[in-house]
Length: 186
Image (spheres, rainbow, N blue to C red):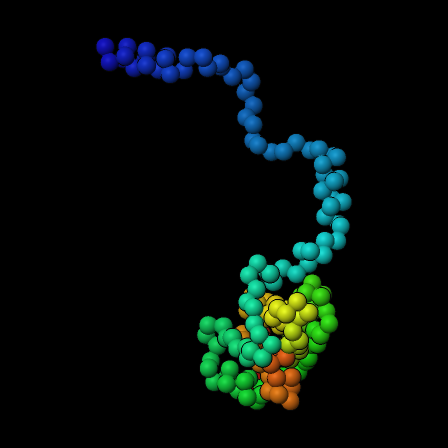
């Protein structure tokens, strides 16, 4: 009797289901569409400047004042190293001036500058962002963005405002990660 109940239950569950008429499985593989492939290829070769600088977001910009001293260190960076940086005891081997640039141009220049410094195994650089108040009375735009971007860059270990002779609160010493080149004994 149990079998009859199971059979009638099964029949009611599959009522209206049509049997499969072919024996080939659909693998989900997209069929070749020459027009779609050509469109994708042409789009892939187009230059898209808006995605050129990965990782430096403006989603949340930390607004800073013209005379605010900036300081940030990634977790694990030694306090002694940051004290030396703040005291100007780590020589910077390169300098970038972002004065008068648009935010997008500054972002592009900063990204390229850091990439080049990493490639050359540079330990410390100076980034001059300026601190001029804007015409609309708001806080310095480039300084605020640089403060935010450097915190996001994976190769930046820390930064601090410069000594007055190197730009004061209008510039930053930035210490970078290095992969030690063979033969270097630092």
